[in-house]
Length: 605
Image (cartoon, rainbow, N blue to C red; front, side, top):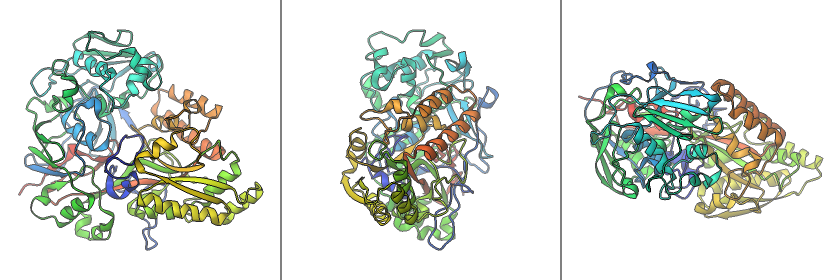
């Protein structure tokens, strides 16, 4: 399953986004309690939700010093076989912003920072190529990084501040179109594509960002200067799209097919659409890397495996399949009963994906809060989630913020949806009667994927029972987000999946609910525009204390949901990853949104 951005699950690239929960694009964490309410698993029981995330520390130099913590029982050597559905379109880090490319990029490349999963289950943003997670000054406007010693590209050339400067300057080039744009926009203090005006065409004609924006006073030091405080910079730098690119080795567009690497592996062979072989990068120095173990000698990755194919191979667990795993293929929906076998369960890890599904309500076309509340009470969470596989697909959601994010409060349920997931059409009709709106006409848009169609039928039936008149329309999956992204889209309700880019609700609330962002193509799909939201977003973004900010984001979400109700939270996506019996160290990483490839090893005879 392919995800076109970490922020937004856009269907149409590979498999429909609707099948994420079943097919398994991204899942996170280890199994434990949590999840905002378990989904009914069909026999009245509750599926235990994956573990939720509490805190993330920004590590100092000591916490960023390698080598990485050893995985208990790990053995070096051997070959891991990876069964993937989709071949990467991009290998240039600056072009990487989809899940199946990110997983491979993390084996190949390093950045200034990365996220480390400790053996005890806690997480930290650590210095990767840099000595620590960053030194901040000027209330978050200035960040300084110092490079470690003994860091190299796989051709043996040392990584210097000139390479890091080039890494960021080339992101302004016209041919870089697919990666994240957060840091470019922060450096330029610009919205949308306006950041490109800061360095048109990138550095290739001899121009550079001014030292007042990006400074490299010596070979080891990089200083970012922002017009506004950017307290999430250490998080943002963990994105594979900001991993290091060699100044001398940069071949511009051709770098996308044959990049230099700085991580523990390099590309020995790549046949697009067919296979990729990764072997050890002999110039990677483990003592410089606090986050990565590199136990296997090789990764043999093959593409074109559908979810049912990879699931069948991994369930069989014979021959080479014993040494296999998938980074992004989850369990095929039709195999849900098969994996209940205890022998298979031992080889199964599962957790939350970054995405939260919601039914967006257009604030401009449905202005009466009582009508929006009627929609919320009527919507059957169980009918929606059943379309996505039931308990294997997700957990019912009480809010818009994922259980993976710091600040999340378990059990939050302002409209009683977790307690009554089948919906309450009687209460919905009461609200319509209070609003003198029985027979209210709703134009409902969904896309053509079978799961979305099935969920739409369940929602429409419940709304009509409550007293609405529902007009359903559908569009092809590849046109869906372009359609709802139009301000005058002509629809009242439509589903959206949103996922955080890093472990902060700063990548969730502003993008969806800042009224100043309303325009065609933007992601404020509900068209909500409230002064208190805009002002609170500005305030929270200035907070330097991560825990304080996390608590404030969740509090703002509560107010948005309870006072304005711009959408109905539906469910938190989950994922289930199966592996062969000769694979050790398989756990989920909340930040990577998939199995932590840095901990995997081959169980030797």
